[in-house]
Image (tube, rainbow over all chains, first blue to last red; front, side, top):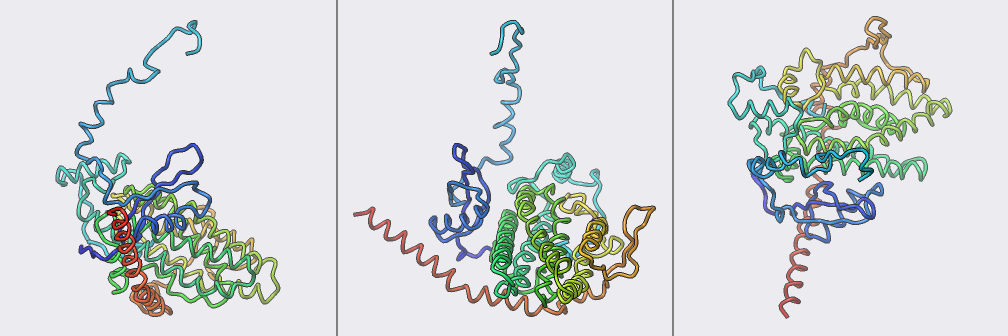
Length: 97
Length: 333
């Protein structure tokens, strides 16, 4: 497939849904620059009161981990159950902890 | 259903044993219900099929704005106008979510538009029918969006992550569309005068069979289903969904006091579903081939919008470049 170069760049959109929550990725859109991307994101992704704040990041600026690295990156965490509180069995008479 | 004109490869589905190691792993991931993400391995045919399917779905949303856009300026009340405007704006958003999902597969937005404009990619046959009266706004929301929901709800579980996520958003927004249509039908068919009731019946008469066609050809003529279903980019067969739609819609028509334009429609006690007449498949093929009542008008409207918008697209880029330049100058001082 050919990709034309005069397209508006692609932006990834992150919305904070409520005060106190983190921004979450909601989708992408094309826009000429960051200011334009915020305006478009407001029109497309917050029409039903979904947001209190918007971040936009140009998609080309994002570095992602590669699927082939999945094993080395995430497998080491699988056998470390002692990082979870449920690993530690405490007697009932020790009370709530 | 938005893939109603996707051509079959004619090949049977490969068995796991016959696949390459990579393809087998891929199919096993799908069988386990895992989502495929843009950077993951996928067979070329899976990618191509998805681009076509998502692209046609996106085009359908965008072209689908036209029959309803036709009535925004002539809505009977300010409230109805605001409702319809919101719905048509949603369709633009749905098109955008879907185009973005297709773009994650390596096709550009401009390419997708190009393929629509040259007729290489299709959109749903339903949007090639005209909207002649205000009652059509009711029928379109009730029937066309109703049929779309039948198709889109299961697609929330499709194997391709970006497509599934777009479907979740779309389904959340879509149910308002069907309800606003049914609301119009209630006002005209149930609470309206004789003339309004007649208009509502006329709209149902004209949109019933085109709505049934939305689900695509009958299963006996739809040979490409098996591979798409193995890949979980199609979740139900065409006839399954069509039957579900008929079973859900007939009681709604009864509630409205309208009659479905089908003399053979009756309740089947044995199967617990309605027997109904199939639409005219010759007409369906004819509309897909470009000979429907509005094909030329719809495509011309899209092409005009694209060429009329060229100066805006270029102007926005030029403006952005200028702003960036000025900012750089200020920082250099």
